[in-house]
Image (cartoon, rainbow, N blue to C red; front, side, top):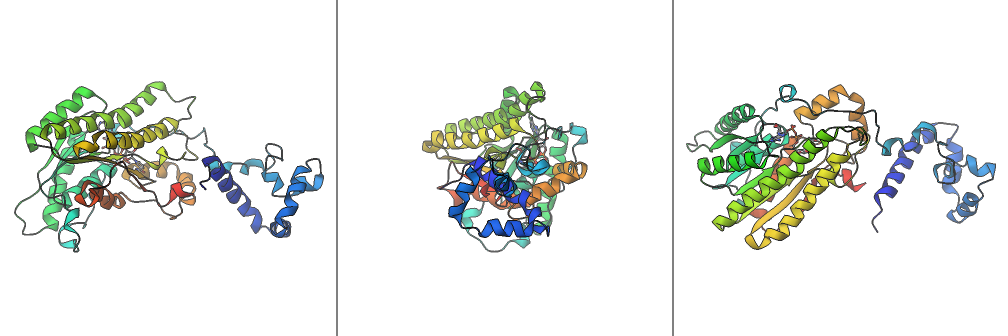
Length: 378
Ligand SMILES: NC(=O)c1ccc[n+]([C@@H]2O[C@H](COP(=O)([O-])OP(=O)(O)OC[C@H]3O[C@@H](n4cnc5c(N)ncnc54)[C@H](O)[C@@H]3O)[C@@H](O)[C@H]2O)c1
């Protein structure tokens, strides 16, 4: 049977908060005693609330039978959000650029199924100038597709488009035909801007076959003090932006009567509540993205348009590196909650995105592929 999120978090809090106690010499005998006590003897002791002995029982003090605050500051510590944590999404001029990944294609290829190839396709990646979008864009180019990068920052997108072709040239010496990689401006939250970008891309490439929606951002405020205009902006970019590009590309595919593949970048935050940083609007936005993918997968299945979601966990992009440099205590908390024990790198998305876009995933639609080192399993 599945455990509810509340139970999972209670268990997680219990294990993490009681772990240090196991290590102290004085608490060890008491804990060992209660650990080996037969299960049948636990219920009567827990019910006897007025009994001093039960108040001292380390397991009873971790239940609802103990008064609030009995466990001191460790009570729920690893399972609650911390309102004092505020992280604003930076202005464009303060965004760190993302380097192009080395040695992932060309001569470094090993034999694999032809189904994974994206040759003769035109793919579009929103938010492709930086971060996860840029690295996924590189995987798409390395897999043989032409590419249109769409971003709010056109200058950065142009620079990266140039670098992607240079990287491809280096990794494929002797190949004459280079991929056609173009850069385009769009504010994904603005329908006119999205339509203008789609028209420009179709004008330059002749068509669009695949879409990856990676434009999106997160920031941290507790829900009560979150400035509402920022909430609207966050939902606009993460949800409306995904919806507008998906419907725009699907309409184009339906007009051409050809199959296509759409991958929406959600987040594990669409399935769990991150701690300790508060981010309710982002979590809700990513849950919307995940279910939008499922809903559109059903709606467009008859048109052979597949729609899937990738939900990454904590990935070390140039931006997350900046955030963790400024909030060093976050890194240890995050890593302590990941079964794999490590954050992911943007390169960890190169395979998943290529797979879902390609014919290798021809019968996969409406799926949510979690790339999170097991975070959402515990
Ligand atoms: N980095 C992570 O750990 C992580 C984890 C889970 C999910 N995600 C999701 O992955 C996606 C990419 O995140 P990232 O870490 O690469 O972020 P990033 O900030 O490094 O890159 C996002 C890109 O999107 C562009 N962008 C932002 N707003 C835009 C708009 N209105 N119109 C067009 N482009 C816009 C930015 O200019 C930037 O190039 C986001 O949807 C994010 O929520 C990231």
